[in-house]
Structures are given as C-alpha cells and as structure tokens.
Length: 441
Image (cartoon, rainbow, N blue to C red):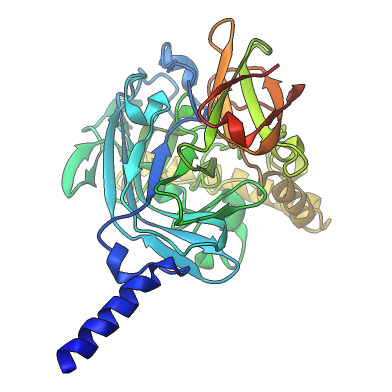
C-alpha cells in the first residue's frame, strides 16, 4: 500500500508539467535555448574592421601617445550566471558559469550572427519578463602593453606584457571589466560603493517583454552585446604598486559615455538587447531598400525614438564644470618626481578653486550631470537589425503574426552606432507566413 501511494504521488507530481512551473520530469532538459552574440546586428553582421588600429586610439590617451598599437586578436568572456527579471524577484534559470575565448574573426559564431549557447533550464511559463540579468565576471582583450616612466632618460619604458587570470590560468591581456563596474558620474556620488553595473547588467527586452510558453518544443532567447566593430584603445594609470605605471589596453567604445583623460572607471558602455522567438513560428523579410543597417520594430508597440540618440557631451568635458584630476607621483623613490608633483599640485589647487566657485557653488554641476544621465541611461538598440552588404537585405527569425515598421540607418565609423533612422515602410507577417520569405520595402 505504501509503495502504491508513493507511485501515485510521483505520478501526480509528474502530471503537473502542464502547470506554469518547471517540474521534476523536465529537469533533465530545457526547451529554452539561450544564444549570445557579440554583434549589433541580429543577423548578417558588418565585417570586422580592425585595420589601421592606430586610428582606434581614444582621445583620452595623454601620457604616452606614441605606443605602437597592435589590433587585438582574441576576446575572452566570463559570465557567472543569468537571471530573468519580471515584476517580482529574479528567476535563476541559467545559474551556470560559462567562459568563452573567441578569436576576432568573421567566421566565429559569436561574431558571424550565429551566436554561441549559454546553458540554462526552463523558466516559469506564461510569466512576463522585462529584462535579463547578466552577471559578468571578466571581459578581456589581448594585445595590452605596460609602461613606466624613467627619470634618468626622461622617457617611457615598456615593461612586461600585462596578464590577468582567465579560466584559472594566466593569460596576456587586461580585464577591463574591473573598471566597468560604475560610470564616472557614479564615482562622484556619496553612494558609489552601493553601485555595481556589471554584476548584474540589466539587458532589457523590447516593449511587451518576454513570455515563455512551454507548449512549444523550443524557444530561443537571443542576447546581443555590441562588441564587433565597437572597440577602442585606452590608457589607464595604475599606482597600485607604488610606482606609476601606464596600461594601454583594448575595451568597448565610449560612444555612449565618453571616457576622459585620467578617468579611473569607464562603466556604462556595455550596450545590449534581448529578444525571443519560437523556431517554426518565424519568417524571413527580404528587400532592396536602404543602404546601411535595416531595422524592424513592432508597429504600434515599439517606437523608433527608443533607439535614436546623439550622445551628449559630458558636463565635465570643458569649461567651468571640468573637475581637475589630482596629480600623481610618477616614482616615489625619485626626488625629481616629487618636485614635479608639488608643482602640478599647486596648479591643481588653483584649478580646483575655479571649479568650486564656477560650478559647484553655482549649483549647476549636479543639474548638468542629472540631465546628461537622463539622456544616456536608458539607451537601447533595436531587437531586429541586419547589415545590407549588397543590393538586398535579409532579416531572419522574424516572429509571425505581427506588423513591423522597417527603417534604414547609415553605417557609420567603427566604434559608433546609428543616431537616426529613416522609415522605409511597413509589412505585416501573417501566421501563415511561418517558414516563408516575405518581400519587404
């Protein structure tokens, strides 16, 4: 009798798989696939352009401007886990650490529009999620360099190649994720210790969110981080060893939040989007209009204004509201280094007084920064994007049963994103169009 009751209880629990919650009978497999991509485009991304890397230096480099720049060859990514966020608490559906070491090549899945998988379990069904929380541990590009100033020769001398730990081993490169945790404005606030922007990073879905339906045999959750053609070469001042070292390294472009000379942090420049679709319930849109990036958004639900932004100038870029940087001692054991420091410190005091009277006392510093942050804080990229590389374009994995507005945007210089979009037309994808190619504008 006890065995019968136990079997009955197990059978009753297993049959509850038609409910909204993951159950024991489905723990061994997942109907949800998480695909991550390092591209602005959802398919057919623009080819890599890392030629003439000397032209990819950021304008914030000031200590050593003659370093021979070599383009990076590999991107290394370490993600602790992912969660889905709705109106309530976050759902830990992908609590698996995963690392990726990816050559900067157009043929690599992470950069060719195919994407690489992140392991996950099924989340709750019929529950609306608004964002994906991605817990970044590390982001690394190789081809970094390190220099130290020699007062005897009055020149910068190259030191050993910088290294960091990836997959529990030493690798050449700089983990720039360590200085992405907050923005520069965050660092000025009294609560900066309570801010952490990369653990997790909030990646938002388009309006309407993501509703997982376990009735379908497979659902794809696509998460895109803009990395391809969105990198720059930077300089970082490192005084952690008691000697002034200059690191030159590759990191994400500061197109959205400008990095200025001697900034100690550079967060807020991971630009991402998440979307979902059900294989077998999508169509392909092809057309001949436009000449750069082709974008599709859901008509009546989404607004192209969500994706249009000309990054504003930082309040401390110039003028009275430029907060002077504290000088540093280049070599604690060198008397001339201390003399240089005291001279620079006198100028710093003078500049600081001007900043206080011209900006802080006038009460405009906070107001300017708040206005700036209100513009850049919620910038997003479109969920469906392709690059028109020939006479026609193709948008893949477009969910059916919806009407889309299609826009064209110019493909600008590397390290930048489109700022304006031009309407090409609209198209309705019927349920019966699943698996078909539909002609658009």
